[in-house]
Length: 239
Ligand SMILES: [Zn+2]
Ligand SMILES: [Zn+2]
Image (cartoon, rainbow, N blue to C red; front, side):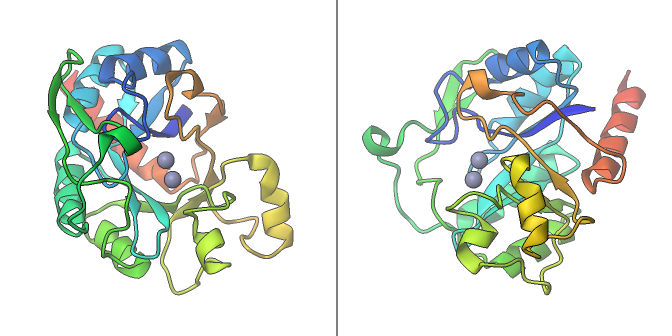
């Protein structure tokens, strides 16, 4: 299945205001994507609308969130239902320091409905570390039935490797995201991941034109495959 499992909506302050539910799904449709995930920083409030639009397009949505841990490590957490993801969001939001977004500096944090109308805005600054440590965040995600993946391990900031220098064996992570797959052989050579480490590569799109640029297919041995199977089954039941 052609996927892009790391897309930001207009709820992320760094996400373009044009990253609306309809624009994201329309672009994903044009790119031929079969499964997408919208993963905003520490937030999930646009997922109810994205889910409705994705359903209308016949695109599978994996509800997700890009959480920022206390160590400033970005962690992609995926869940079976939007409701479960919103429960997770609430815990994450409650753990953020009480700092308000300054739109003129960071950008808007817009909540939209399925017609792309603005129905709200988040006040707390979302691109900031929560009080959950990496270990706690992965545990919490798993307790809630989610799948936890290190975001963009090959990036120089906000990644597990840039912060910790290695991927701690004590952490029960499900997989890694490699921003540029050309880096994978080097990561294996350096012993930072193994050839067996489940991996994926996504656009991390903050602007519409980047959605689906990776043209990657999800393999059946990927940890997210089980989640995709469940969602596919639910979709068939609903039809
Ligand atoms: Zn990130
Ligand atoms: Zn991101």
